[in-house]
Image 1 (tube, rainbow, N blue to C red):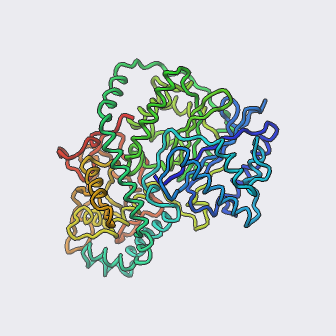
Image 2 (cartoon, helix red, strand yellow):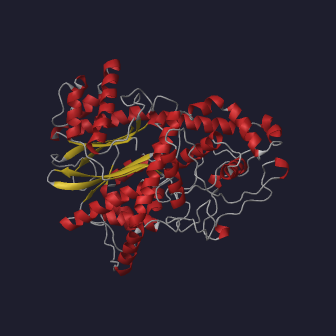
Image 3 (cartoon, helix red, strand yellow):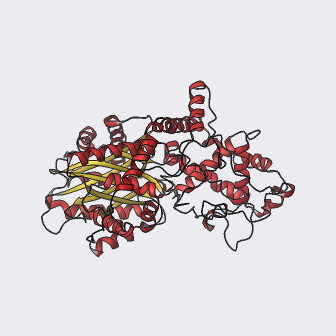
Length: 565
């Protein structure tokens, strides 16, 4: 992936904990108010987090001795090349520190130096000597063990995502213009699309560049490679987890310590509808065998998550997530940082409502002290999360707090915009899946339900195209069949009857009203989303994958329910 995932943990001087906490709160207020701050001009940066890890339990700076407090800095960055391991960390630091040093020299902003002046060993010259800062941060950087990057971020940088959202907003404004309604309703879907392409020419040109195509091809090839290689262990691992669950004896869940009310209020006060931050610090298993088992399963989960085309195990709310092991004094800990949509409770419910998701959570965290391995699970799991959660003192999102206008986009918004770009950029004649997707978009204001994983046939097709056509500009289209969309009479794209919900077909819940029409609104050419998003969890059970009919022999190995991890 063209991504840098950075986690830096530095020890705070005991007497500086209160001063650092105050400085972090001030920086967060500056960022939320969109006033000038050191991260604002770094276009390669997606998200950044700062928190203080200290005390036991992990509930912020302790009231007593403060010799064991650490400053956590997490960042998600767009890189120009695909790197791994220490090379990826070094390249990410080079990009960030050079940008911070240039910003500091230009504006005189010393916020970054003021933060790390509270930490042990930070160079006295600060960003005036960027090479020293790079070496200091590299020394304290922690490599990730497991990472999830939503597919949209594998394709586009933060400025490109803003361009993509501008394209989508302009398309819906154009199609919903009442003065244009009577003219558009006389046209066939392909003619509407041609008219729309002409109107969106400048916007479309900015999101159909060779760089866009290169990044999309790289993301699809990586997903295809992960899909094919994971097939070797998919079914054996699925069987292993099923046997483990069958013969395991659930134990009654013991009570958990609830953190102070002030911490809970601080965490809940920061929650918004999109792009929230969560930081957890947990124990690692005490036995060597348990630690080896945890590392093994984190590697499998990291491998598995590369296959996802949209969402994370049917959870279409996670932008970035990572697990990383780090040393805290003489103890080893496991760090988890995630940027997600929806409320805290809705996000946790999304995890536990899917068996495959809760299974891989248990595989990773089951060795941690206090983890609820018995039954009931949901409420004890939430209490456990509250007990190991660290308040995010600073949260930066390039889409909300960057230099451009604030862009409130959820994960589902990103994928709707990617689908619109694909439909507008592709050649429609003979491309039946794209034609059906276009009709669905014009009827409902949204695209058909997108597959979370590539099928075996799709993965092979992508790799064949990549190997045979690397010298040409590829048109990476996922060849899939889309369920039939009701046709309109006389070329007017208005459904003759309400669309049947997936629940009525036997295996999926009805489409949320947030996913389509606005109740009580005047019928428009398309139903604009506005700030509405698809629900966090579409279906906790098994569903049919769009584009593959029931009983299809080409469904692929990943089409029958969720994965075990």
